[in-house]
Length: 443
Figure 1 (cartoon, rainbow, N blue to C red):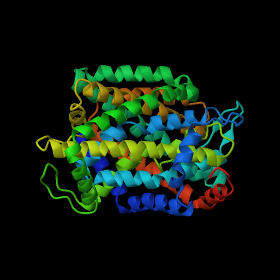
Figure 2: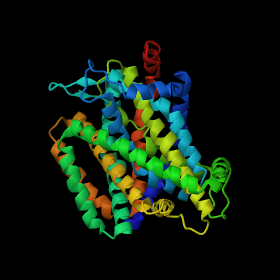
Figure 3: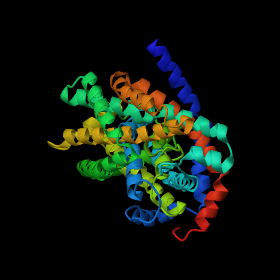
Figure 4: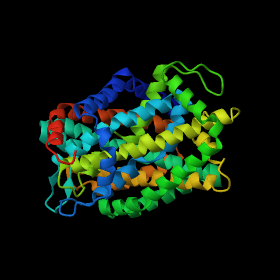
């Protein structure tokens, strides 16, 4: 029964992530990049804004707090296990597709953040709510599609933001320390329940404290491994670029792949990593204290830069250079491949990876709990929030004990379904995005 279900989900995800989805996603990234005159050129100005305060503006959390929460939800196992899975299934060329998705996705993340602030609403208790559902309803009058997006978001939170993350945590703790997945799942579920009781401010405080620390430690670990593998780094870069656009023959430590397979896994894992075009990050961007949509749009765009252009690129180079340096290793399991690479760091390698995955994955669980709750609140108000929270916490334990392939296939399917209505809103409101950008002094 389980095998049949997994086969069905895998087939559905494979169909969804065929050429039509790839063209729609990359086409939107490219279209917005051109129409907005390459907002990637403003990335360093955007980074400066991200650490600046806008004290007189309305909102629930600071701009950096909103960015940290967004990064917490995106810098997760997609950056570590997800990239390794892309390499295992799509070959080394998947790393380039993942990276290109991030570079072009900066424009899409910018557009999402702008619409989130422009069409956000203020509740009776002073809380700011926004996201693609409000852009669809208030900007386009597409209430039905807004409801569809929220339904998909509320369900998708259980995949990308919940079960995938808890699965990575439990598997790592079992393989490294022999802790049964049952107890790891139970502990993470209880800890999550304690944090989400404090709402977006509590989540933002946790993420503001831990996201910068865990990102810096992980990047330093990657740089050390690249130093150890320095003789193979250039070969890894060449292999990644060559195999992204040509079929990868079996041999040399790699399985045979097609260009379609390489692009499919690279792009889907890129989306999983940075979520540009998915519509999740603008839900928390709408809560930011900012006086103009363009300011928060620029801040939001830095999330994709840090997440994919920097961290995923480093991870990909670490993995491919490690495979070239140690050709006798097996890399068919993404988690095992990442673990092997970090074990090359003396003494602290395994603990560093464990700490990185634990904090990355846990913060992702927290960020997506907020996304899911806002979707439920849009659909039914606050009546069912407590039920949703209980289901969300329970799913953490389920994800910790189920088979990894099932979890990733479900996440791929839900990511794709959730992306479609958001991309349609971005394309339909492109004129509004351009007009707001041209009228701003910050761009």
